[in-house]
Length: 429
Ligand code: ACO
Image (tube, rainbow, N blue to C red):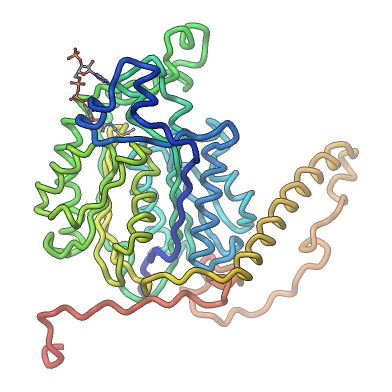
């Protein structure tokens, strides 16, 4: 049975601290007029001292899971797309896994700069279509304010912080992620990068003195590259999905520059009412920009059942990617009741306690003599091995299920069947 990767949950997190163009003009030689006219950006949000890429990812993921009505223990894979991870390693995705209590999930970070969310969406959809996973959490999150150089007016005003998440779930109804196209050109890597802090240029007094831990960008070069690829890759993804350009219901581009967005929309022949933009309020949030925009589009009632949505990103690497998604959920979305949210609160408290318990257990274990360590607090599985039962379920259902239901409610969410194509009559079928 063919499986399709449907978006069944979505959530975003935006920090509270809004920074306007006028605020920036107070600390560097720029103006609201320059930033607005060259980029379309009016303000952005910067994370507070206690907000990080992981904390914002967790907040966005919880909302997405609540909307999907999926228990964290049902997640098979967590992908966090980011260029500002919590650490070089461990992966931010692992911190998210721990905080959510996603006890059966694999987790990794994905580095594709501003195209990261599209890359993550395509990897998640592949995992579902291959049968390797039933539920995948894809997050795009950034704390770019921590890698912006306050002495560089060519980059500082452009970027902002935030996170967006979607839950992908396997479903037999055709739709969901219909196609994607990914691309890269490493020869242009030097035009948008953070030079130091990796293995080529490890942190040293020299790298700090020369401000090499901050984002560097050749704006003109990136602009030229973006206007070339954005429309082209979107068109290619539509062709792969078999979706004519005039059937696109909503175009969600990476929110970097309004002039780049307008150029791509013109190339595709999409009218402005079908193009979603919010960079005037958030600036460029890199990997978070497309999922945040998707969440806002849903909040504003701009997504309906069976809509065909094109999402496209470009960025450092250089990388680019586009995906076509057919929205499967019945809309508008009904907000969960208070008791359901209360229940979820308890689930996350339990995850926190579990995390504390695992850390504490490791500490005790380390203090014991080696031969006693394996006998210390045996897990339930070790204490009472379950007798193996003969497997009756069909082959497709066995993949990655581990005896769990696909969602917290015990069955996949309801997906609306796709609308029949207008030219097909009943007799023709
Ligand atoms: N305020 C005032 N003047 C400025 C500012 C500023 N904030 N920044 C640059 N300038 C000046 C420059 O110094 C230059 O002055 P000069 O002519 O005396 O040298 C002048 O403005 C023009 O500079 P340009 O770089 O040519 O300006 P441009 O019109 O190209 O706009 C911009 C710059 C907005 C950065 C544009 O090139 C752009 O949007 N590029 C794409 C950037 C992008 O999309 N990046 C995101 C990639 S996603 C990722 O992976 C993170």
